Image 1 (cartoon, rainbow, N blue to C red):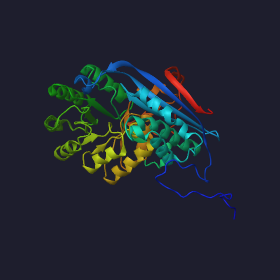
Image 2: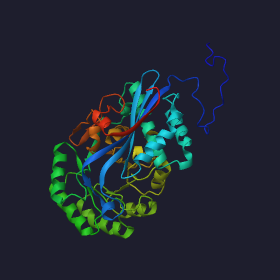
Image 3: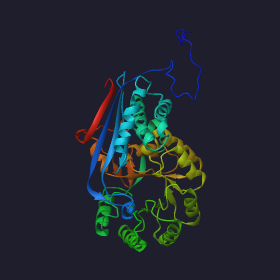
Image 4: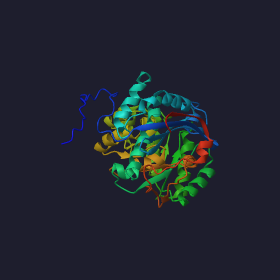
Length: 399
């Protein structure tokens, strides 16, 4: 029998040592990494309840951190993270600080590489901006692995379905008049999108109720409708509003309370007939575990770039599936389509057309469902427009 060690002494495995080199089973090495900071301009400024409450300014652009990874054997992967209003340059700078740690590593060792990258910058924490920067690397590595296998990422993970129910949010912001909201809803439904989410959280809740009633009348009783308060209510307002809104047969009420109010969300989930959804603003597996442990949600809404990538997202899914929770990730349909397709129970994916210009490829929507593309990996090719919107970029290794 061939000596696979070639006479070398193997180091003992220590799961706490994230810096161990790739072992003898290594089949490839990361040769180069390109990081890009890209600003996506929106056609018009948009506002939700956070803006009306004076907590944030209107959203005019989105900062993206793109990570492109190449290997010695010629495989490539693309991943991205993002930030709204603030944090984009910080993500980019942190990614630049830790990128060298991945050069020369086996790209197949995704879990170990996540640990190595997070510990390379652990002095700024293991959640938030630091792990959002790592998400771009992690997603690129999963994309690369699926491309190497010549499989769509959903199939690599083990798909339960080849299409996922989808709903549109980008036409329901508070900065839009109710007539504009109706017009955009009609366009979305005509495109084949199957459900609508409407922003709420006005200083005067009666305005919200009138808008919900108008939208429900516009779309009819059979189109699923959800609302999103963006964390702007207190417990009393959320309970009173939720009870009045039960007449509209809502699919869920999203972020009625502060993202970290696990007990308050649990009380609403217990007391209201309408399901409760939250999780998009949380940035770690541990924070999502608190939602799950407190029975705070019916729909859990992790965001893969915000929690640190696909690796931690899958851990959240395992916890959620064990508790029989429903899944409806936030934003990033290009990534979340594959991840929701691999979830056990029927999920939702959020449709935003904003990022389409970044890619040469388009996702197909038909009869209320988004179709998993049959292209390898995430099925994405970066566009020339993405390059034109690039503010900064840097290359590590040989790219």
